Amino acid sequence: SFGLTLVEWRAKLLSPEKVSIGAGSTLLLKGDLTGLVVESLTLEGALVVSVCAGATVTLKSVHAINEGWHLVELKEGEEAPEHLAIRGYKLHKRGQRELVFDKPGEYVVDDDNGWYQRCNLL
Image (tube, rainbow, N blue to C red; front, side, top):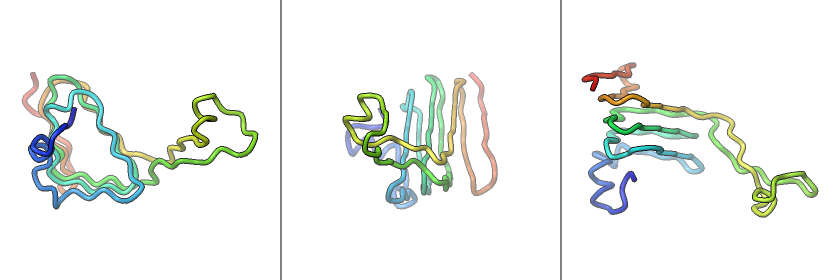
């Protein structure tokens, strides 16, 4: 988990004032998040971050601006699987940025300086 308590979140979000998640945006964090730290994030849309066991990831400066994910109401009589019919809507993914760290190691993502670095391979 990214963090269950305020203390755990503070350890992961080093500068909360540098984290901006726009209304209607989606941040999906998957995998082993014990080594994930967010220094600066601007999100307007959807961002998916997948981290494998053994990966340490620092999001030094990440800007994810895209069309994002939207809930679309099902039309009257529209064919849909039962779980969607019960909800009355479906998820439409118009755009997203995806960061995948599928090999152990240390990673730093810095959009401000135009680099994505992998260092200290395990």
